[in-house]
Length: 272
Ligand code: ZN
Image (cartoon, rainbow, N blue to C red; front, side, top):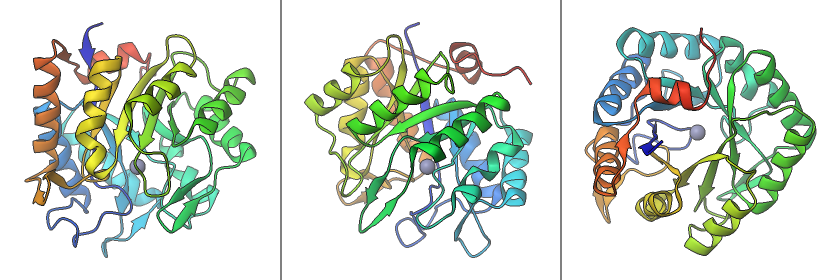
């Protein structure tokens, strides 16, 4: 399939209104951003939610409201975060999987996050993977490091994650691996045969990671979670503007932009 799957991460956990004055925070704002992103070419919404005060939360009711607001307006595939935010407990992070979204992120190892860090032990990863499996939620295996790819092999060997596999390769988190073409190629060489993958370049690595995805046969993620700039020193107008550029680059490179239903069939998502 010569189709490009574009994920839009519209809010994230760490981005604030100080970083971008139009960061979507409420359920309605997130739904509007999702509609605009979908129109610009995104087929997956990566979803974090916030309290009314703008703090990251994994509260089930806040997720429920955001998901139904998005569902009322667009057919975009919803991928909830289970990475949550720095300092959250594993139970908090896993909570939104109970809502049986089509997809969820699954962090595959402990990682520096600037001056903080996010812990993911193998027992936690097994629990997250089994909960997703029980509810037929497709995991995106988020790897911030080569060791995370090897940790994902453990989950696969134990039968907790089954094909089709989808990886999220997160690069340029401060304190983590940078986006570099040779590093990306090394990560890719260790993925299971036939695995799908999405390049997630943080900050200034966003556009280089899009180029890496186009060059090496992967998918793309953009959005304010990863990067709020359109160019050096120039804020993006919206999440959709970042999606539109990724879609344009994909078309110029000879890809069709995938629809949400393309993603449902490619990833064999649960028919709910
Ligand atoms: Zn996220």
